[in-house]
Length: 332
Image (cartoon, rainbow, N blue to C red; front, side, top):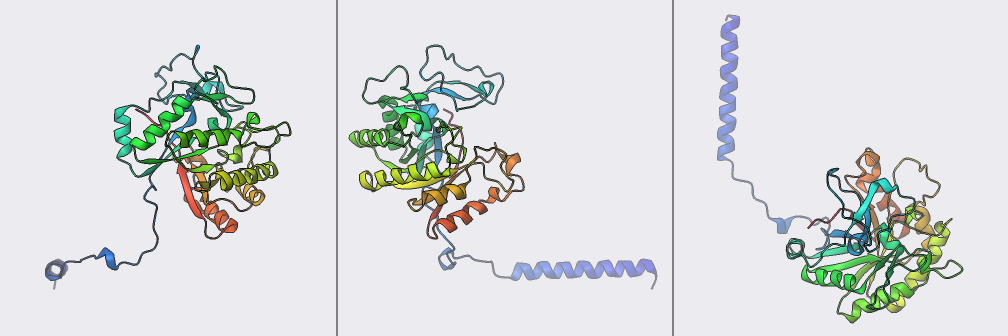
């Protein structure tokens, strides 16, 4: 047999084998899948896919500048909360944002398509936002606060959540204005917010004590605020919730910025230290994940998979739920 004829015979055998395989596949019975017989590995909450609205978007204030450099920001002259910006923030990165129109019909329809869901209204700005004592909204925030949340705008949040079949998640004011002369957290602002919410038929499903306490200084916490101070305040907060709002779920600590790399900032408070200082009291372990904004920082780190957080939640309390909170921006 010549080399050429041997090659042809080999090709012929290969083609015959392939034809045989195809015939066998065609004759095989189709695969079927019965989900009811599969082993259940776990469940997720019906509200797992939810959304966040920044408190500063509700009140108005200086928020992150639009990504589009050609986009023009509205004038802040004479506007509500025009000076509200995170402590130590670079002014060049922020621009005034008018309060979002939560009565917008299109926005409500789009949000309702995600139902059931949680509607989180919080963010760094929430830490230093004063909730108005009456329908008469002060023109400027009291000392120790950076912004004012009017009753009208909070009612807009409640009405939106009701229209979109969402349950509200929020956090408390924790800046110096929410503290006594000794620097201890007071519950009067929280008590006022819960009471007004109930009075108009609303309900707050879950709360974090503070937004992102790992970066407490940025959130307007008192100078020198550390894990021990957080633990002291958190225990007072939990005592208030258990006594006054026993049906509300406590989330915590609401961390951000945790990676496998060592932290260069002396103001950073680790999640482990926060949990150790606060003790029991949380119903669900929460952390904040900024998928796009922190892509570089998270590259190659276990944070991207939530492993260190699940580990810390397990160390803190074995039966605790893990609630990741992905941040984004709302557009009408």
